[in-house]
Image 1 (cartoon, rainbow, N blue to C red):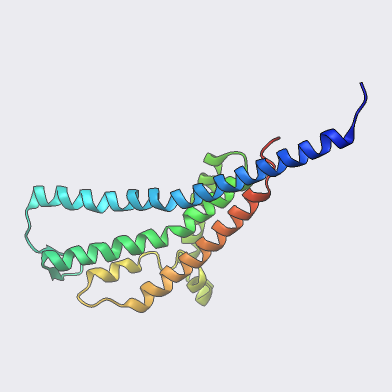
Image 2: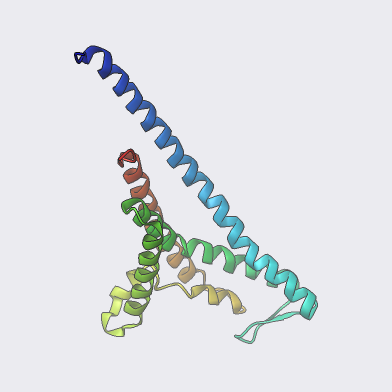
Length: 187
């Protein structure tokens, strides 16, 4: 039996191209379905909390820990603002976990490392000796959603925190997609 390169080479190249197209299509399908599933999960928590709270306490005005009191339509809008901000601020941790899961073969370990890095960044944020370096950490503005509980909202801090998390999360997602597109998943 002899080896004939003209018969086997085009077949293997075409098979490789088909595999690469399927892998890219899978990556894009995963990346497109992930935000939908995360949005459902993020929206499910405040909606169910609102329903349970309405059943347990009625529809009285909401009093915040900061002392402000909101009627139901305003309270719902503030809860929506906080939910949106928290969803955007979690993009950094989700992007980091997604990137690390593509880089390694242990997805659970990647999520653990992402949570560990998030905790480490929170510890670094608590060190006042770092000065203005803390302002550039993605977790520095993690609690700026608390401004939505005040009578007036300071949008500048919330926008800065959301933009940092959105940019860093988008970069990590792009790196993960690029790595997945070039990763050898056949071995």
